[in-house]
Length: 204
Image (cartoon, rainbow, N blue to C red; front, side, top):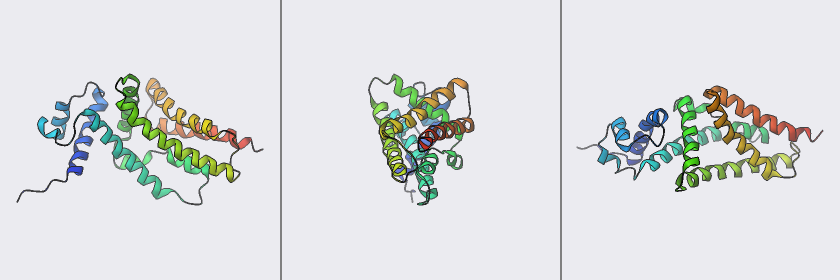
């Protein structure tokens, strides 16, 4: 009897098999033919699971964000301060158990690069939806922190946007400076912590 193929599982297998290719060649230079070969399927078969290369890229990011979200929800507690929740939210070290950390960093840099040259708006629309979720989460945490007297800020939106800009800008800095995942992770938490320190000192 033929084995029943789980379509979602197969999609994830194909997406995961393409990660190394995207890291090595970049998004624009990676072809559907190369992805199919890496995944061990015929070029025609790959289109049964993905309409185009963009869908594969988004599937990869969906997997990564789901892993991160599950880890965050597992580790968050009601006793945590707003600062602790934000720092935990930007801690991506749990990726090691599922994906290669250095590859994840390179992928994120490629994704941001694709957004910068995207004339169709498809990359921008997709990734901005994640940043919108980040904005909602961070601003909620900051308001909670202000209400509890942890921070003092008259403009939560500006502070939230500043944190997101640190996140985006650091990816460019890390690429230019040829830094690895652990260095990038350390800097990210350090910069966010330093920014939040300023709003904590305002209470003094």
